[in-house]
Amino acid sequence: MPTAGAGGPARGGPVTFRCAAASLARADDLAGTASTVRSFLLVEHSGSWGSDALRDARLPAGLGEHLARGGRRAGVRVLLVRRPGRRAEGVGIRVFAARAAGADSWLEAATLSSPEELRDLDLDALGAGRSPGLTPYDAPLIAVCTHGRHDACCAERGRPVALALAAGRHADAVWECSHIGGDRFAGNLLVLPRGLYYGRVDPDSALEVADAAVGGRVSLDHLRGRSDLAMPVQAAEIDVRRRLTLTGLDDVRPTAARTDGDVTTVTLEADGRSLEVRVRRVLDAPQQLTCSALRDSPVARFVVDARDRGPSPAGP
Image 1 (cartoon, rainbow, N blue to C red):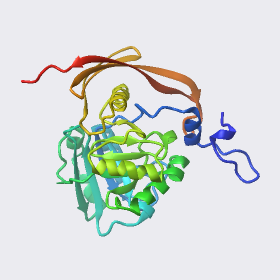
Image 2 (image 1 turned 180 degrees about the horizontal axis):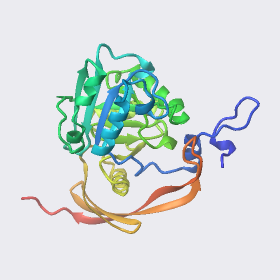
Image 3 (image 1 turned 45 degrees about the vertical axis):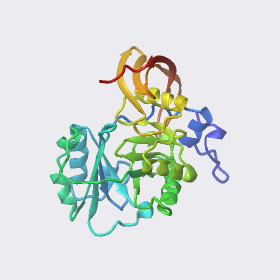
Image 4 (image 1 turned 45 degrees about the horizontal axis):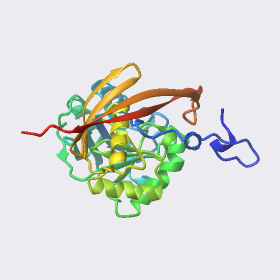
């Protein structure tokens, strides 16, 4: 149930529940909470998004459903994006396709003259890790979730982050985006093409995250995980990075994982060593996890037991 620490009081009224404040009060761990997604399609739409962005936005008849259905079938997360403050990018519709795959990640972009051209994009190819035919895009893209119609925390905590980035040196890289998952960790930020999810980001820490992204590094304090990895593997990678203070994008490389019940054993290469990390998934007491949730759900977290396996075998 909501508590006085979970939100702010309305004038003369009861306490307003906010899932991000409640999550912070519980000290929910960020590690291992990134949505598991490998392929993304970002579509510029500066108008209102509604609760279900693709179906509620004012897109041409049937287009939102076409993208939602095609993305679901192909395993592509389709997001709507806009420049902070709903400022239009210019003539045409910007579109980005991204594949999160570690060192093999890639990002492509195009400007379409009409929304109807979206119907011609090959979502099946994108879902399979192949180019849908756009133009390679070399700079990182920073998407900040500001989808207030989906969850109030995303707007309240996400918009100041997006505006702060837009006002500075990362203006060309930042976009507001629709729901990416993890409302209780707002402000949420996604760096593409690597699929790096960050949570509890404020305007100051957002600049640190963005600087790291441009510099080919990860920022450890707010990292939720890499979207191309299973959640226990995300937790294992973050544990290794924190223990060894490794921030390079490819400093840590998961090589194998096996799961037995609630325990996943992850093998990683890092700092010239092969490391084995046992990750146990634990479900804590049910809580209200989003601002609009109608029922409580268990809070999942990962308990890590790291074991150093010694130097990696010498290469050929």
